[in-house]
Image (cartoon, rainbow, N blue to C red; front, side):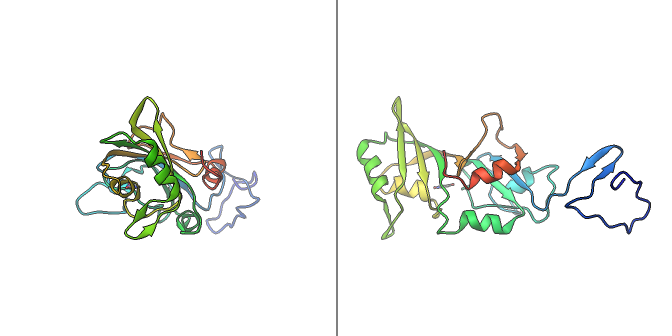
Length: 208
Ligand code: URA
């Protein structure tokens, strides 16, 4: 039915902003763009398709949306929050070098991160002659081989290279949040979930 009247003609047009459409008693609303939060497991590549490896899009099952793609990249061995959407303009707002949407990671390190490293991250680590934006490094006080890192840039392998510049190897990396939206603890690796409008807006807020 459209606005309570049975729709008999396939040509019937609807105004998605005001008409009420139901099928077998279930009502439908129009959604232009779709947004998903995926918990990427290690071993999966952040690509739309790949000849060898499973991709993040292979993990999106029963997910409506046209030309969905991941927003930014995680390394194959990194796990955590990957945002997937068909809204290219929104993706651009997150990825644009000037947007500085914070990304929060947990890094497992081969050596403890000390206070001098916290200062170096805050001052801006130099990678290939270029000074990175100040980053927050917060080692776990009970286990300084685990640390939270917040970056406002997305350079290639940036977290690993920033630690690498000080001789520290990242042995495991997980992205926990993009902007103010965190990966939920009950979203298991390999699982994805559609985001609500409020959650999508939270991505563009200040972070955790
Ligand atoms: N930094 C890295 O080094 N790897 C990632 O996957 C993300 C950020």
